[in-house]
Image 1 (cartoon, rainbow, N blue to C red):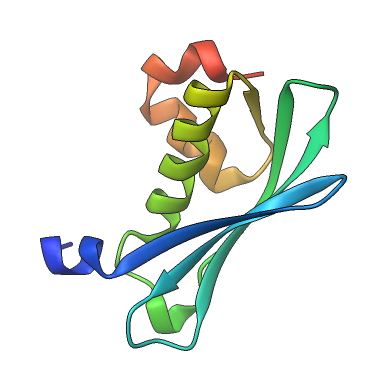
Image 2: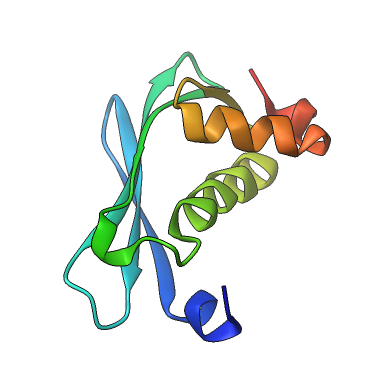
Length: 102
């Protein structure tokens, strides 16, 4: 992944009463990546799915989605329950995230 690929991905966050999603917008592409979660209690986000369409694959989009929720967890004080296999794998690769894992 090049620096240009990273710079071309913007992450937005949409919330709903019971959960929300992080959405990856890639410059020049109609397809968007998405990571969805449900809210459990006051301080836990259960990440259910991460989806990156093939048209925007190979650019680190899924990793950027995970980085966004991890940054928010650290800043806002919630913990993450990684039910999605991609997010679970990311937590295994980053033992330093243990304090934000539910």
